[in-house]
Structures are given as C-alpha cells and as structure tokens.
Length: 195
Image (cartoon, rainbow, N blue to C red):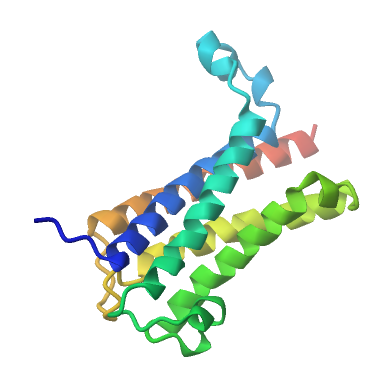
C-alpha cells in the first residue's frame, strides 16, 4: 500500500511549483519582447497563436503562488519535521537546513511582492519604471526557488545533495532553462538597445 506523508506532499508541491514558476518566467520573458513579430511565432499553428500569453502568464503566477504557499504548510502537519509556522516565515530557528529553508522563504516573499504589485489597483499607483524594477525581482525569485529545491534534502535529514536524484534533476533542468532564457533575454535587450 502506498503511504504518502505530508512531507511527500510538501516535496511534490515544491517540485511542481518549480516547474510552474519556470514556465511562468518563460512566459514573462516572451511578453517582455516582441515575440508576435518573430518568424518562429508566426510559423506556429493558429491554435497556439490564439493563446492569450498575458492571461496564461497571470494564471500560472497564481497557481505557482498557491503551490509555493502549500509547499511549506504541509510541513506543519508532518510530525517528523518539527516545523512550526514561525519557522516558515522566519527560518532563523528552523529545525533543519536553516540557510536552505531561508532561500525558499525569501523566494516566497519575493513572489508575493511581485504578484501583489501586479494587481491593477496597486500597479496604477506606481510608475511603470517602479513596477518594472519590482517585477525584475522575479529573476532572483526563480533562481532562489530553484536553488532551494536543489540543495534541500527532501527528507529533511541533512543528507548531502544527490544531483542525480530525479527530483533534483527536474530542478537542475529548470535552472538550466532559466539561465539560458535569461541569457537569450539579455542578448535581445542589448540588441534592441543598440539599434
């Protein structure tokens, strides 16, 4: 019989959140470029071109936020983890891997800031430059969250990182995608700036 613990659910939520955040990050990069003018976009099937990338980007952000919030909350229900609510928001006294837990906490706060400041009622009170600078936090958010996923022991037993563990490979692939996409986005930005 399959025995799924709250710790397993927490790890799964974190892993799915990593994939969703990576996808959301890529959508955000698309939106920040002139992707609709690109020959690759124009060559895609009509069904794909009809997708509202902006709405998809927003919804994946909300799904990612939900998963990010559920990820540590499941730890509270697992008696073996000894995590308390305060450890999630202020991991100074977290029962294990304080620094790595802090990476996850920082990324959770950064994601909250990015999403809250994107809400229309708040965004309208900011200049575009201020909003954009806050939104650039997403680069650090994605990196922190993925690194958190790579270095955390899913069993919370302070075991060394096994880079070939399937869960770690997913996070590592997300990190590679994020780095490559950031490089491509940077090259696009410098090309546009120099034109």
